[in-house]
Image 1 (tube, rainbow, N blue to C red):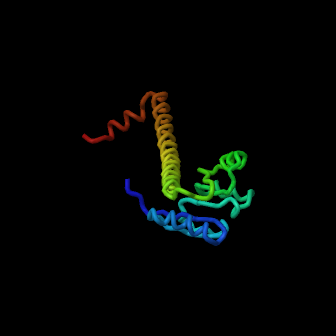
Image 2 (image 1 turned 60 degrees about the horizontal axis):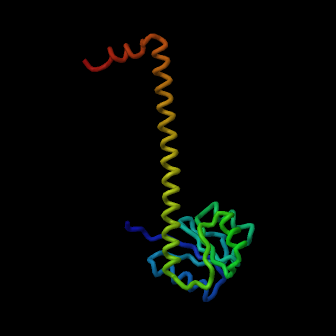
Image 3 (image 1 turned 180 degrees about the vertical axis):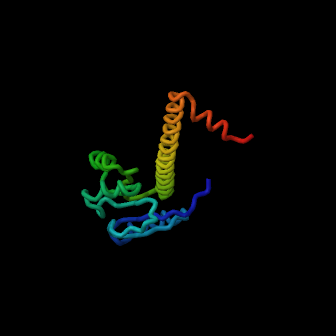
Length: 161
């Protein structure tokens, strides 16, 4: 399946580590927006890769509600891993990043899952509309049936001859 170029935001303090993350992502043909905070992210951002030190604890839940987010951290503590997942992060990577291909695969998978979730939401909304329409038609048919089929008879006589 061919994928279009996606914009990935890399949030970290300026320096070698952020540049290395951005380069690893760019090698996969994705566009990268590098920033040192989560303010003013481009509207077409598909996913965020953020270092834990660059985002405050209060901002994590706000961030994960907006976009799929991968976190990079220097910590290997289980408690930190659990906290990251609890606030809705897609995945957690321990720095230093030794396998750029793994990061790229995680990003592609997270984008794919997010796209599927958005598609499911659209499908759900469309099904709700169709269900409402069917319920309306069913109610009209019941009313017609209760009135002895007068409406149906009129419609049949009005039809093509």
